[in-house]
Structures are given as structure tokens and as C-alpha cells.
Length: 220
Image 1 (tube, helix red, strand yellow):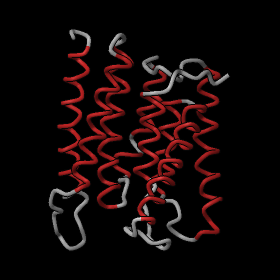
Image 2: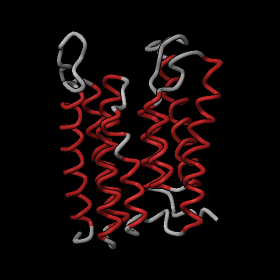
Image 3: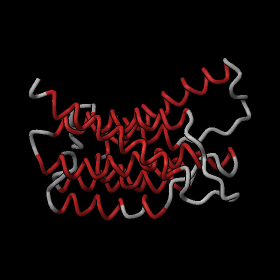
Image 4: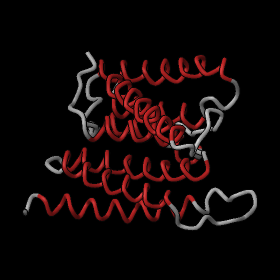
């Protein structure tokens, strides 16, 4: 029970941050009509994601406080981005762009658990360039908005934090979850084949899974 208590506390704190993130997303960035969204199903989803992220961060990195802090800060940012994209289909630059130099600082300080060696960094940089460019090119035939610019910007920091292999696994996981969720919503007629579904929340869920759940993967 003693070992489980920090995880329980982290999950509770994560749930609280998820709730705060949802309330931030309901207000910021400001809606065009000035409205503030009431609590709804999105609130519940973000609280659950926050709780899982908090608990998983401590469960995985509690033995090493340096990665715990480095990944914990990143997970906090991802939960907030999850909330804003779920609410407004937006990943604000003011959050996504600073995460890139943050990831570099984490590497320089040796605080990251994934990108540790020079080879790891080179592979991560390659992934941070190739994956967003490839996704952008693949999305062109589907028209404007097929993939958001915020998604591509976020992928840069995910690659630099998680490493080349893990960002790929996160993308695959996010795409699989997106496909399942969309199929269920279409089957239940909550969506149509022409409905727009933001990929950002699924991308972030996949990134959190890659960082917090799967085993360390060597980039070499």
C-alpha cells in the first residue's frame, strides 16, 4: 500500500489538473462568440486522461526524480493541449512551440529517459523533421484541415522527448484509437462520414501511452 499511495496521489492530482485544464480550455483561447462552455462529457474525458497521466508518470518514474520531473512537466502540458484541442480543435502555439526547446534542454541536462546518446538525438531530430513533413504531404490530397498545423508542431517535441521509435509507436496507437472511436460514433450515428474529427486528442493519447506505458526502446 505504501508504494501505491504516491501513484494514487498522483492520479488524484492529475484528475484535478485535468479538470482545471478543461475549465481553461472552455475559456482560452477565447471563443469567437465570447461564450464559456459548460461542463460536459469533455470534462469527464480530460479528468480521466489527467488522472491516468499523473498516475502513470509516478508509477513509471518514481524511482528516478530527474526523469520524473522532466516527463511530469511535459505530461502536464500534454493534458492541457488535450483539453484545448478537444474543446476548440486547437493546439495553441504558445504551448506547442516552447515544448521544442524544452525537449532540447531536457536532453542537454541528461534528464530524459529516452533520448540519452548522440545517436538517440540524431534519430530523434530526423523523426522530428521527417514525420511531420510526411504527414503534411500525405494530407494534401484530402484538402485543407486534413491535419492541423498544431499537430505537426507538437510532433516535433514528442519526437525529441520520446525518441524516434516511440513517436512512431505513439502515432500508430493514436491512429488505431481514432479509427475505433470514429467507427463506433459513425455506427451509432453520432457522426457521419463527412464529420470533422480532430486528430490532436488521439495524437496526444498515443504520445502519452508511448512515453508512460511502453518499455524503453533503443533508437539504434
